[in-house]
Length: 414
Image (cartoon, rainbow, N blue to C red):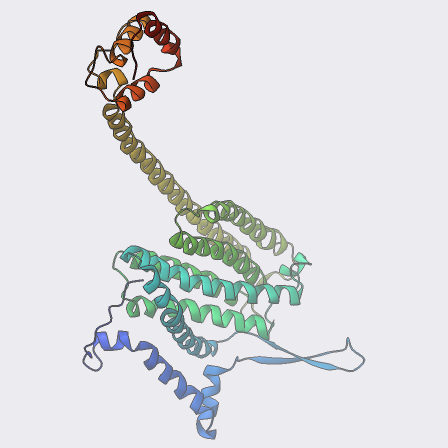
């Protein structure tokens, strides 16, 4: 995501800069039109298509002493209108998070242009992944999909969904569709556009595929698993931007990323490859939403496997790049440290060098040189501080010999 430059000048109305600066207000006005449509009887039927979840089916249950009605939903063409409305809501929420949270943090941290863009991306995705992971987990627990994995393929096709599950898919599709106009609103750099388009397309293809092919239960489990791993990555990146020494989150993410890919493949093969292939309801029927044929199963598994392989390839390249950068940084530090240590040795010569003596070859010569330098008879111009410094630097090995020579000749040290 690019950096939006705020200027005091008002751009011309309906110009590109005007739309970019005021896109949240424009989209809010469009969303308000649909909400106001609910107030009038003439337009309410039209507005309901955009705001409420469509294709309601009421089913009576006899589990309780009295019959209770349970509302379920299936998918259809009218869902496109609902997805469009919640795409507008996602654009508004994106602008709110950007202006009231991320922009304020950016002003405090004073990031560079590159970090600014990555910080905005991770901030937006962290909020979305946290919300989606929490919501998806609550659906899995309420529908008991985790405690009974057989329900992932048992009773296929799963044409009827509870309200929470259908609304979850509507919001997911709306959010990832909103990422396309955001490329324009956020002034995304040209070199970043292909990368953004690839992962937006992958999200839309997999979520829409699970929704249309009535694999919504498997899709929900895989989405929650994937969102948890991605949430950890983007939170770790936010922490890294605040303090570059905190990189433990990336290590944990790397382990969970590989485990997530393996678990995704295992659940997909178990559900599509074994569960659906042994199900009683085999065949292709658009009316009943049954797509349980070999071609569809192979296509679904191939799409999932190729996506996981692509993600692992990107992951390996990412790790290799990080290790390469780390190795270069370490080698650069060593090169910078070597001249410093060398210069320190040059700047701190031996005590005899300070006194104008050449380093003797044996210890007796060294003792005699130090003895000559310490005695005032040989060097009357030296101060007491100079003689004490040389005495301390000569070391304890020569101290006894020095004192013996001084007493023998009756000379004064200081």
